[in-house]
Image 1 (cartoon, rainbow, N blue to C red):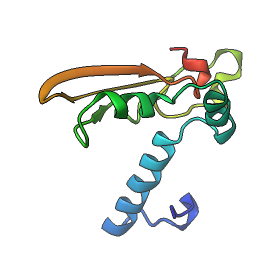
Image 2 (image 1 turned 90 degrees about the vertical axis):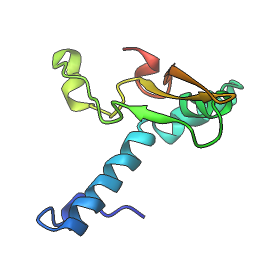
Image 3 (image 1 turned 180 degrees about the horizontal axis):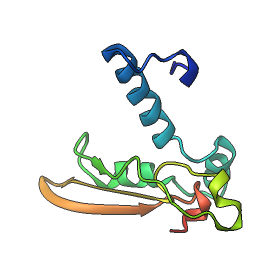
Length: 112
C-alpha cells in the first residue's frame, strides 16, 4: 500500500523512494476505477492493457510517465492527472525495438 503524502519524509532516502512509489501508482492508475470499468463494459481494454498485449513481456519502458498538462482554462487546473491522456514508450515486438503510444480513454477521454 502506498503511504499518504503527509506520512512521507522527503528528507530521507526512504521517504524519497516512498514518494516515487506513490507517484508511480498515481501515474499508472490515473483514470478512475469507474472509467476503467466503463472501458471494460464496452469490451475495450485500457491503454496499458493494449500495450501489454502488443509488446513482448516485460519489455515496455514508459516515457514521460509523470507529464501533466499545464492548462488553467475550463477548470482543468483542479484536475491534473499524470500521463495527460496518452501512454508513450518503447519496447520490443518479437525482439524488434518499437516505439508505441496509446490513447488512455480513462483520462480525459483520451484527449491530448
